[in-house]
Structures are given as C-alpha cells and as structure tokens.
Image (cartoon, rainbow over the protein chains, first blue to last red):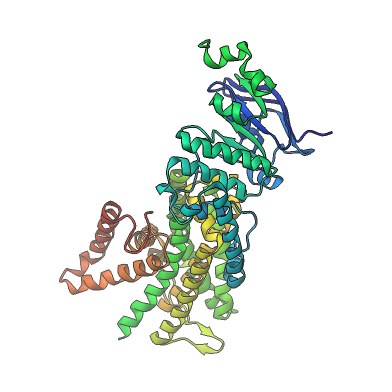
Length: 254
Length: 288
C-alpha cells in the first residue's frame, strides 16, 4: 500500500543554518497529525516544502503516489493540498465572503476575455459560487460576518476564515499552521470542534500546534521535530510521556 | 462651443488612460509610471499606419496598434513578476525614460522633437470623422465601451483576483490561483486601453510630439487616478475630467502665458501631495 503523503529525506539549508535534516515521515489518510517541536524546529519549513513555497535542497514529497517535487504552489493546491499561514495572510481589505471566493477553484470570468464577452454567464457562475462560499463560511461559523471587511473581524474570526479559505479550494489534505494559537478559551474550543468535524467529513489534517492540551485532544499521530530532524513519530500519549522529548520541548522544566 | 467639445474629446481619451492606469496601479498594485510610453506607442503606430504609402484604414490601424500595445505592456510589466513594489517603480521609471529618448531621437520614425504633423482624420466604415462633434461621438463610444469593460471585469472573479493580488500574492498562490496569468491579463487589458487612447489622440490632434508621452504625462495619469479615486470606475472618469479642466480654469485667472505651463505642473504636484495627505482615497475611490 502506498502512503497517503510521504516525505523522504527532506534536507534544506538557509545559509549556514540546516533547517531540515533528512526528514522522513508519512501522513495517513483521514487522520489528524500534529507537528510539534520547539521554536525554530523547522515546522513551517516543512509546510513550505510540501506546498511548493520552498524547494528543498534534497529529498522529495509524494502525495497519493504522485511526486510533488518542483510543482508550483497553485499546482499543489490542484493536486489536493492546501495550507494556512501562521501570520494568516488574509486579504484584509476584502470581505470575508470575497476571501473565501478567491479560494474556490476554476471560476468562469477569472480572465478578462470571458468576463467581458460573457457577462451573464460570469454572473450566473458567481451566484452559484457565492452560495458555495456562504456554505463554507457557515461551516466554520462565520456566516453572519460574510459581508464584513476582514480587518474588522476579531483575531479568532480571522483564524477561522483562513480555514474557510483552504476549505474553499476543495483540497483533501489541509496543512494548518497554528490554528489554535493566541485564541481565547471559547474560540479555542470552537477551532478544535471544527478540526474534528473536518476529520469526520473525510479531510486529512496536518497541524502545527504548540499547546500540548490541544495536541492531546485532537491528534491521532504526532510528529516531533527538533533542529530540523524528525525525533519521533507516535501517538500523543507516547510522545508527551517521553521524558527525553519533554526535556527538549520544555527545556527540562518538567 | 467647439472649445467645450475639444475638452470633452480629450477628457474621454484620458478616461481610457485613467482606466488603464487604475487597472494596473490601483487594482493590481503594479505601480507603473510608464503608461504614457504605451500611450505614445499607440499614437505613433496609428499615425504611421494612416500616413504610410499604402495607408491602412483607421479601424485596422487602431486594432493593430492596440494589439502591439497589449504585447508591449505585457513586456514592460513583466519585471513586476520578479521584482517587488519599490523596485518595480524604478524599473518602470527607466522604461519611461527609454521611451521618451526613442520618441525624441528616432527622427526617421517619430519626427523627433519636432513631432509628427499631418495625421489624417479617421474614417469609420466610409464615414469621415472631421468635425469636433463627430469626434465627441466617436470618443464617447470608445470611452463608454472602455468603462463597460472595466465595470464587467471588476465585477467578475478577475477583478477580485487582482484586488487579492494587490494585497498578498503569496496568499493568492496558496489559494490555488495563477498570479502570473492574472498579472499578464491585467497588463494586456491596460495596454489595449492605452493603445486605443493613443490612436484616438493622434487622429484628433493630427499632430503628436514626444511631450505628450513623457514622464510628466505618466505623472499626470497617476495624478488623475489619485485625485479621481483608485480602484473605482467613477474615480477613473472624474480624475481626467477634473484635471483637464484645470488649465482652462487657470486661463481665467490673469497669469502670464509664459508661466502657465509651469504653474500647471506646480498645481498637479500640490494636488498629489494634498490628496495623499488629506484624502488618500481620492474623490470617489479607495485608499491607494
């Protein structure tokens, strides 16, 4: 059986810093995998390497038996993998609805010729897409903020919106960079419930997360990264109870 | 009356240029300061086709010139795909200076600094456009079609994509969209607008020289977008009508003609600064 997503020997240098060293891991379909590790461990670099934002010096990534090496970010989205960013990168001057609609794949009128010469067809297509986007916003609990400009949304709402935008792409593997960080307790519960719901709907999730409570509650698998190297892969219980890993993660505080 | 008609014709030609500049600078965030160069190429090409020994009719001349300007604008915008914001302004500045140098010094092709006189009036399906009223009709149709295209494009997913690109290109790529294709399309459309404006301008004035297509002209276009309002159709219309009225208003004030031209430049400069400081969204637009 071929693995769902397989990363093999990923290696990358930023100048003198070796950000990834011989990283090899697999992600299983339908599961929530948490990527944990201290700051600077290379978590976001792995995201960048999988999604085509960074070409690793060495190694390769295979998704459902297809090599992703050298593909551009938009091609990787079409292959079925979409990501969020730690610093959100929303279009803050657009409405929440427009942010989601940008994510929806191949729409008629995305180039000027179609938009100018077939305006009615464009309009009809947009009406359908708007319904889709509203449903997606509803799904993450932001239906009532659809018409609001994103800069007026709270931080928690903006985080949910980044998830809505990747959902709109139709990708089946979602890479979420710290979806729960900086949230109030209530918003945190909403995000965790959302991630579980996405899993039950058949999505596979790779999540960067710092909060061990969140990891324990949502993760099926945990990848522990340290100095660009994959130290361990296992269940959350096994990883969290490993004293050597706790030493690295908390600097011996536990 | 003829004076008023001339003003309307010129303003409508500049509306097309305003749309072109607004599309690139306001909406897509490609800060081009060389739109007047593309405008100039359109004007010189149409003049040439009409004055050649085997002269082409007006409509095919305009179509070929527009097509050339599409290609040219894609070419001059391409650096924006590699170099970010500030660096592109410098690149674009260089392109404008280069174009001015060619317009001024390639005497055989452009008539050099003396300009190109005697450009024949257009003839559309056998109808000779000669009176200023006829030009008003022609330019109103052209500017109207331009505005319609702009409206349709802005309302379509293409417009949303360009706005998103202005905010964050990486995020657009992460959403699965092709940033390169969208930028090339925007440049193409802006090039077509500028080329058609150039053709109308050359035939209306029957004389063109490099001073209409230099850096000052590019800055005038930016001023129109800033004063009118970035990213809106209304802004692209208000800006040209307002700024072209300015010289006429100045003639009412009793200032010597020798300083009128520099006074105009002065006022454009003051307007730019004042709008950026006190009303960055322009009269009818959004923040640039």
